[in-house]
Length: 258
Image (cartoon, rainbow, N blue to C red; front, top):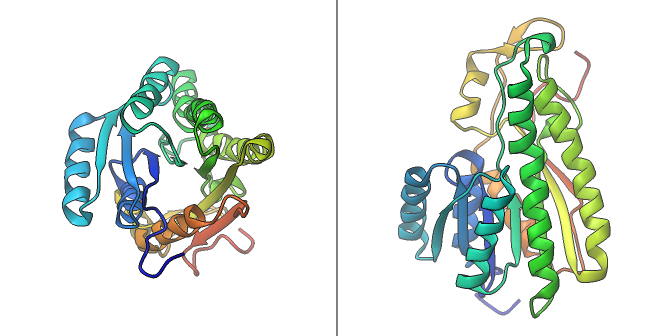
């Protein structure tokens, strides 16, 4: 890399779920690294506010495009916008996701199950599918996909069956994408995040249910550490790949017996 050159200069990145939380942190870091950015989510007002704030902070190009990633027609429209306005896509970050309240497995409704599946897994698949079509056809060919797996991709929390099932499935999607992308210079990796400090994790400090039935507070880490890891993964040449990376609060109770 040339002296002073940013790794994302001249490249186009899409971050799903980019309006808030971890996605916003990733988007901000990628914009600061020189990527022209598209952020997507379901709420245009939130997206546009975030896009304006990131652009003001970094001086970069940030485009807000609303999309329900669980809807194939909306995803197709999102990628048509990217193709028309930017001409290519170098990086897709599949970050969008949601969860249901922690209740016993048998109390989860089919509608809740289906909603989590659409947001966390189907959305990642649909965006990956569209990214493949674009990355295979563009010149120069190829690109990178980074999936937000969460530490729930390997280890569940109590009362989290839908979320855990989708995140385990993301690991399979990551590996299949990495394999199927090889002939076309498409790299795919996964970042598993443990207790990044966002609005969604505020409850960690007041206490969350543990595997042994106790309630305990858990430490968190600033989102910037996750964002920096994503920038590192994204900045590698397509001949190199981080297949999986776990970024977590050192003292969270993941490593140990419940």
